[in-house]
Length: 136
Image 1 (spheres, rainbow, N blue to C red):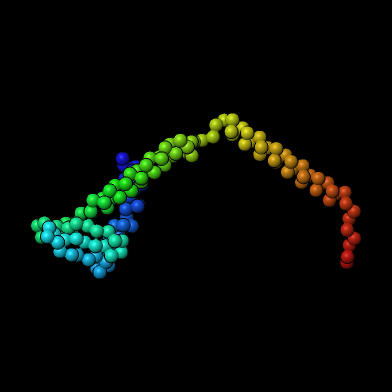
Image 2: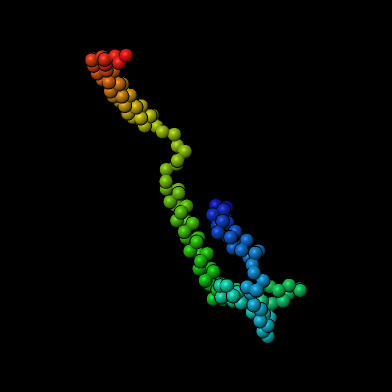
């Protein structure tokens, strides 16, 4: 559950900071018989609000709540699928086995031997070449 929290936290932070910096003219309140209706002019979302103990308490409308719950369920499914994929992958921190080390050293040894042969060929060719005439 903690893992889910830390994965969903970055998704919630932009919405939280955006709510803190909200434009005061973004919302429109209309009085009704049972309280208020709050219209979000940016998204079109409608919330039902009531006054309780001097505070205005708003709740999402039923259809918005269903859409919100559906989105949370979809995000939960994605997180579960990502966790399964992560668990199925081999650990990146595992040290190589003895066979892998031997194979790597064998490749490096062949590379170095071939490289040294090439250097030896160039050196031999240079030593066998006719000396360049002096230009003094």
